[in-house]
Amino acid sequence: MIGCEVDWIRSVSGIEERRFAADGETTSLMGLQAAKRCLQQAGVQATAIGYLICSCGTSERRFPGPAASIASALGCGEIPAIDLPLASAGALVGLDLARDLAPRYGRVLVVATEKMSSVVLTEPMERGVSMLFGDGAGACLVGPEHGRLQIVDSFIASDGQFADDLALPFGAPLSMNGRSVILHASRKIPRAIGSLLERNGLRAADVASFVMHQANVNLIWKVADALDVASERFFTNIARYGNTSSASLLIAAAEWMETSPPEPGEHTVLTAFGAGYQWGAMLLRAV
Image 1 (tube, rainbow, N blue to C red):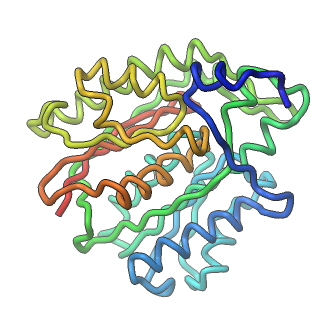
Image 2: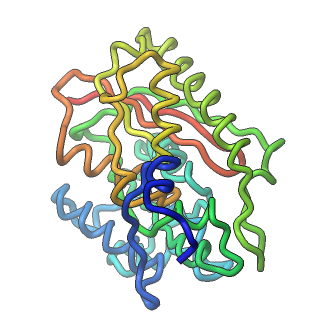
């Protein structure tokens, strides 16, 4: 489609497959499907949700975003439902907000849904950008009661000096300075993780697993190297899905919990970096 060799794509990104939503499959519909699966697995009724947060940078319209539509379709009632148009880092920011909202509202449903194909398949397609992104959605339930994972602490940051280096203007293709993104992400993510662990009396070596926004497998290995942690501790599924922007963290976390769940007492770090620039890390403990 874009004149790229398979081996080249694999070497520069780690991507082997992607998923594209159908023409009528909207971000709201994908988010709804992920939310239903999440609630089913948690054994929680939609009426027990007190707040819904949806991260989506590829909504089909400027407003409203998918949050209220998803809450209504689930049957949550007239609960607060807010949208976070934060590419890549949105799910992490949503989880951070949910952590503080749960004591007030009870269970908070965090959804991240992205239809990146609507962006990257728009002409003119750029060889180094269009091959990166795919579509998908994920969801996570955060509550005041104990679940399988406890949020111990989080660290969120932003730097608007480089906002133009990763942006999606109205009526224009995605603009990405790949070198800038990789440079800043490979520096800022390890610093965020280090700061988070230090204030909790931990070292990177004490963390059993890391789940990172699936942007580029080479970036993931750079972060592992910077932390002096074996790459095997970083869960990856980018080969199968590509970069699904803010949805990728929750998709990866769901598959990580299914395939290699942590033992009680083990620590995990979630981390993401995205447009804005916005980035951060979250420390979890298995219970």
